[in-house]
Amino acid sequence: METKKSNMHGYNRKKLKWAIRNNFVFFVIAGIICIIIGLIFGKGVFNYERVKSVESLLGKNVHTIHRRTGLTDADVEKLRNEHPDFDWEGTWDRQRWQSGVERQKEERSQMKAREK
Image 1 (cartoon, rainbow, N blue to C red):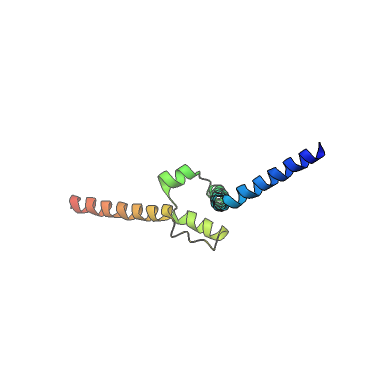
Image 2: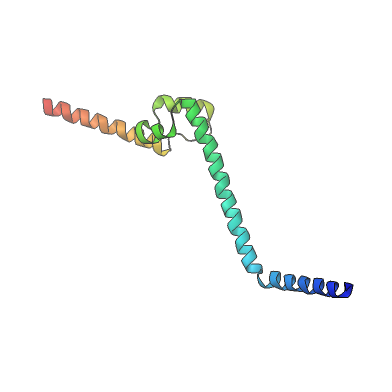
């Protein structure tokens, strides 16, 4: 009985070695995909923590920042004190707020010009 089990174990081991040898490229590709997914999730966790810290510093939720107000001058000063190494001027919310302020100035000047 023991010889039959040892032969079966050897057969399974040879079969496993053959499968690994023939599917090496597949395993490498699957490993690379797993690493990329891990990096994406890691970046998501990092961004989640940064967004939560920004929310707590400003006292606003993400919806208000992204959809309504953007990052005002006072918000940027608060964030610079906490995170000085991050470029807050280059963020999308900040650029949107600045363009909205410029648009409001242009609309006001056009309205004043019409009134005159």
